[in-house]
Figure 1 (cartoon, rainbow, N blue to C red):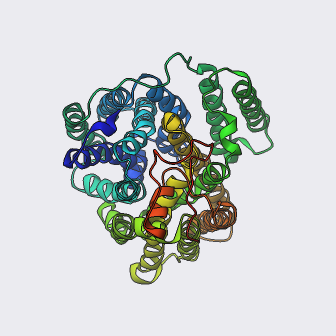
Figure 2: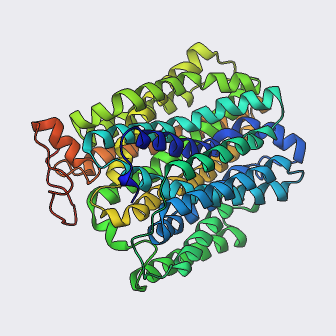
Length: 503
């Protein structure tokens, strides 16, 4: 097990793992600023352009569960290195792409490699840090990378697109991927998996991935094909049938990809629902606000990246400094709810941004609120999602929450982009093109704000206050009464927790 590493070497390993995760998270949003350049170069339409983002998110989300289980079976280090290799090679293909098909296919392969890395990295970190206080700090670093990486991607994408070309937003991954691979080989010892004898649930992985891809395709093309057309309704029905088949498979197979019993655990179920809604709101922020800044306000790519800088700095401050301490002081529920509701206010401000808006009045306040909200909420959401799960299934649990997050983002982005396009089309008859476009963005931001607010309310009401989760319970016990219970001393119950949250 990787927790046999001691001393400063563990923190070095954490930095390397987070660098690999950062590379994955960056590629979720780094393309947003470059989308107009990509569309002009390769001839994408407004609707088909969404697939440059969704091709990545779909394979990412669809394969996270499989990646997490593979890590549990065959060793997290081995899978992490394999995922980094696949992602780096796919990044090279994206950077050299000269057609729509090649770019979308390479993005899909990128998503597969990213899924493997993301699914096992959280398990590696949880095994590296078993002492409660250190684990809280390590999770704060990981939470910053996940929450802040998206905004950093927008900044880096603007810089590379402005100074070089859109191809370099992918080619920059090559030296990073090589360095992460080499450092992981040096720092992480080889360890066998601890779930031997199980078979992979390939049927479950295929059914849920195809189901989600068909659903997103139907939504993305709904405006063009017609929402009541045979194509749209047929694809949605097939997607629902495949989702039902997935649930049947998971209830009957001996070693399911996603044990449905996990969702009987209240914090696990709540965190995944919150993750779906929050991801839908967050991807609307990244995708739609980047388009608003470029197409409505006329910002250049580098200016768009700089516009996200306040959110980056705020997320970094809260994720690395305050988030862990806030969680140890107030538990999971209050920080999660407050963070998401503040983020909802930020999206609501964007929903009123005018055509001739200024940065100080119409952009900066929303960015600051979103940075604060994401910085506070992301860490407790991850900790809640890992609640009550046996360490042997840590890869599975991290895969489930990442799947919820990425699928929420993919489906949410598809829905919001379609709503924005439909609204813009309706308003063209009464407004000029720029005003109609902005009106569509307003709808997307408003619905995103509703998603974020709903996530905050659900998290605040439904998270269990008295039993924080395996990843977090001991930290609260230490912070609350000074004599916390160690992991070895806690009873091996379904919840695997014995501390009471200080809420």
